[in-house]
Amino acid sequence: MATADSDYKNFFPAQRKTRLPGGYMGKILRVDLSTGKLLDLNLPEEPLLRKYWGGQLLAEYVLLNELPLNIDPYDAKNLIVGMTGPITGTGFTPGGTKMCFVYLSPATRYTLGRGATSGYFGTSLKTAGYDGVIITGAAQKPTYLYAGEDKIELRDASSVWGKGTRDTEEILRAESGHPDARVGAIGPAGENRIRAAMLVNDYNHTAAHGLGAVMGSKKLKAIVVWGTKRPPVFDKLNLIEAGLRWRKAIEPRKTTVKKRLTSVGHGEDWGAITKLNWRSTIITDETRGYDQNHVVLRPCFQCPRMCPWDVQIGEGRHKGKIGHFNAGSEWQDTFYNLGFKGNDVLYLSERINDLGIECSHFACGAGLAFEAWEKGILGSDRTDGLELEWGNLEAAENLLERCARREGWLGNILADGPKELAEALGGEAKNWVVHTKGGTPAQHEWRPLLSQMLRELVASGGMKPQGAGGKEPPADLLYREKWGPLDPNQPDGWTHSHLLTEQIRQACGVMGACWFALNDKPPDGVQSMVDSLNATTGWDVSLDETVDVGHRSIILQSVFGTQRGWIADHDWQDVGPRFLEPIPDGKYKGFTIAKWLPELVYEYYRISGRHEKTGRPYIDTLQRLGLEEFREWCQRD
Image 1: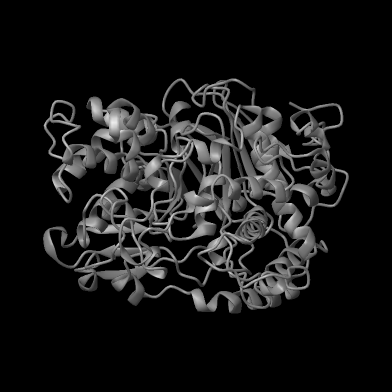
Image 2: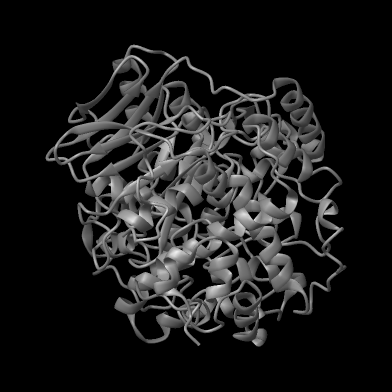
């Protein structure tokens, strides 16, 4: 709650007195589901917008000041705060699509939950005239929010309660009367409070990590947005020029149809995927049949990278089935992890998205269940007759349905998470589980990669982690970063590389951009992004200030956890043992980050201005970032 010196006093002024920077619509929509009250709030004054920008940083600042301590994630008092950023929706930059939601994580119960989505949802909220939403309370019956430039109202969602995300999107779009309305909805998983349930929007996009579960606890089925407004920009010509430079920087990372027809997913970049509950990494014929499919790329709003895609399966038992996918490919590793190959993977990936279950939550829980079945620890008495054999399509599809609806002993405990299943199974099964503080890492085989593993460990556990730096610093920051190249097999320098990338990616999201559209390696990769922000807003943000804004977001993220009992030691102590095991096979066989723990975690917190074991920021860190109002939660010695 706000202190005497808090920026939050009069944060949303009744009448603004300073310039509204370009890129902003000027309003936040506050929704009280308990009372049905809808209220427009003015954006903060310009100095505060310059400090907090938007996205995760602005949203978590609101959450920190409004969310009570010592509540359950499913308490009606848990807030959902969703914010765009100033470059969201201008249309002149790549990746200007991001909207970030924050809340108390249902997966960990004590850290920040963060679900960020791209596509057209955030840009369309701005066309309705809003920069963000604050959702409080809980409805008495299934409800959805319609936020349009024509009207703002809460509507009955009884007709779509129980339906998947695909049908819900189609029905509510038609009900809105606007063919170009955008819908973010939960499926049965969110309704039944699966702890890692997602919001799914625009068919191809998700805001994962428990947002859907919190919405379900509030009986909020969906948010529908529509409008025709456009955010103003300060300097259109310079914005166009900076946007073109940004596009040039990401040109090497553009997706192609050929890649979608041949690629095993993100793990192809380093040659390892998750298989058989993280017990094998070797890529074989997992893509068999992909080359027979029909693929259409589905770009986000005005972004040339072309990450999302649709598929019509062209062979086998799923021939003719349609799938809609986003950029990350975690869903591919999810089903490789259960022993599947080829178009079975794409078929099941579409099923999990329609149900609204975060893929890594299911992959790590179901993977543990399949291994426990293999080893005789889990029998048919607790699977309701399902035979959990690797690659058993019927079993996997039934288990997805049961998880989404909390049906049966196994479905109900999978809904809570892999950590809970391991505890219930007991014995050796506790050593076979993958989790991070009760949440789950993004479903890729990160274990060979030092920086990526550090990222997964120090993230809140209730959000998609950011960071994971490269062997050398970004070209635009060579004036201040004098290091590299780093050795991928030795720990020296990787904590700093990770922190720097985390700061840049946080800043990217906070300004309203997607970091899939960020290529910080070549010259002008970061500078063009910052120049786009300045041309949009009329500010003069420097590269150093950009890094500080990202750091500000990182610190508030950990303050949120500190307030609720998190300490940095949990990052390496509360981890599923399988995640830290030496890699079992393939070209990385025997490698593990564990031999450098906890020192890598401790070093990360030290260099970021926090205590190595508690994670609390030092007072000088708060002062440097203008966050002194949170001194109550700083490290005292």
